[in-house]
Amino acid sequence: TATASIEITETMGRPNVAIDAPDPAVLTCTTTQIPITAIGDAVSYVWSGGMHPDAASNIVENTGIYTVTATAANGCTAVASISITENLTPPIVSIRNESGFNQIDCRATSVHAVATGTGVSYIWPGGHEGAEIDLTAAGTYTVTAYGANGCPNTAYVVITEDFTPPTPNITSANSHYIIDCNYEELTLNATGGVTYEWSAGVTPNQASNTVG
Image (cartoon, rainbow, N blue to C red; front, side, top):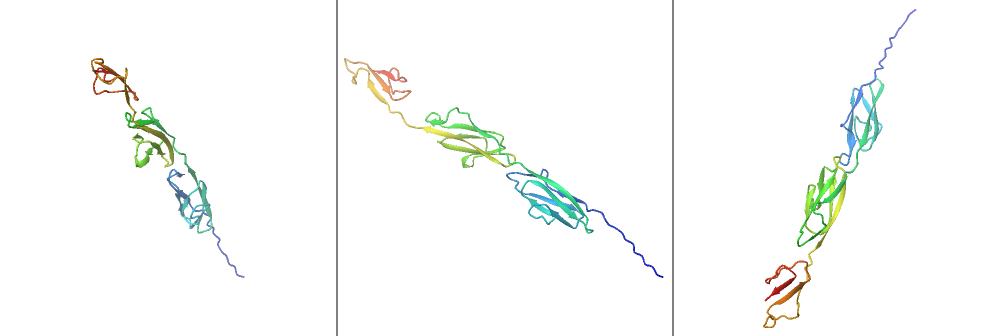
């Protein structure tokens, strides 16, 4: 008789696998892609989603739980997962008018406006950066606020203007415009404005002025 034998061994060890990713793994208005990489001693990796699901290094653009299956040379597998979240909340923004009026004219030549809220930066028309601005012309001014997550939000203020000059008129109280022996003084009345400044007379800063 004759005999033969064989020794059967087993290699059932599962591969080591972990995931390398930014911390936090959050999609924002400026971070629109997140790289995720499977690391370990496997020979192949398969992701449940992403732009490169059959490679160790992957890129994701959407929220969710991503699972990678690592396969060792012995065919054994192991899995690891990562959760991708998002923060797309825009900042709160409003405009505070510190001048107390929205119309500029010959006296008030600008409106001082301040953007307030939860933004970390503010951009006004013309590329002006910062929360505060002096507005010197009529128009609709929109400020864009950016949050820490890069998301924008806007607010606006409307500025009007009135540079229409008054139409002054002068009349004599007695309809007489000649100083003579009968009228040694004349009382002149100005109309058409809200304040007056005469070139001469007894009351040069009033609407009614006496000359003579």
